[in-house]
Amino acid sequence: MTNPIDTAPAEDAGTAEVDDLFIDAADAGFTYDGEHFVFRHLNLTVPRGQFVCLLGGNGSGKSTLAKHINALLTPDEGAVRVFGCDTRDPESTYFIRSNAGLVFQNPDDQIVASLIENDVAFGPENLGIPNPELRERVTRALKEVGLQGFEEHETNALSGGQKQRVAIAGVLAMDPAILVLDEATAMLDPRGRAGLMRVVRALHAAGMTVVMITHYMEEAASAERVVVLDGGEVRLDGTPQEVLIQAHTLRALSLEVPFACRLSLELQARGVPVATCITDDALKEELCALRSKQ
Image (cartoon, rainbow, N blue to C red; front, side, top):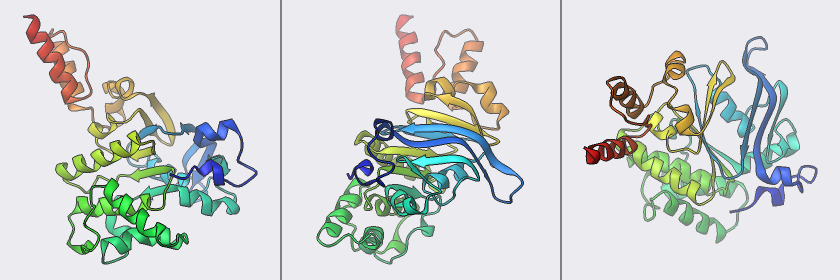
């Protein structure tokens, strides 16, 4: 994978801070209408290689922030820097968009070709990637999302989960350093969500920096870090175990509390000595350990 620091605009490259900090929102503010701010005085950093999940209710600023990472939007106040580059600098726009891949909720919004191989090749081809590297990128990207051998399949015959994998493959073929998923599992059934999350976890394990927006707490539990936004402000920030057990705060923000957490708290209220868990597997282990002591 190309290191974006190696090819970043000269004024921003060459510092250890940039090497370690991929996303830096500093006192950032943004408004669509010039009056009402989606977020204001937002401060958030994401280091290289981290898997961070953004949670929040409707209107909390999650998707707006995602578009800032890709420089589709730029702040009206403060600054957002990606790979050390100011997103408002027009000379950095191409570089940022080439290295921060954004996957939307509806894969049909990103699929542009009738054959899978042509669709995945669309992005890198527009970057000027020559053959045979283009073919190598397409093959590698499809393998990473579990669609190797599907090159000549028609995109309109795919399931929702498969289409979303094609959309991710199209982004991966551009060789990004950051993968931003904006509600990418929202339109999938449970099986499709589980399959897509396996792909995301594997990409992160291979070194990809991942920013994921979701409403599903089970997906948030897979991240290294969870950030909860409310009214454009960071309300909670920590590991999944630190954030997702805060049931009272999550409910106050109209967010779902993980099932394992709810059940853990109910068991504790009934006098059962179990830890507060955020995943079903962790709760099962707690209950099995408790039973073995009896």
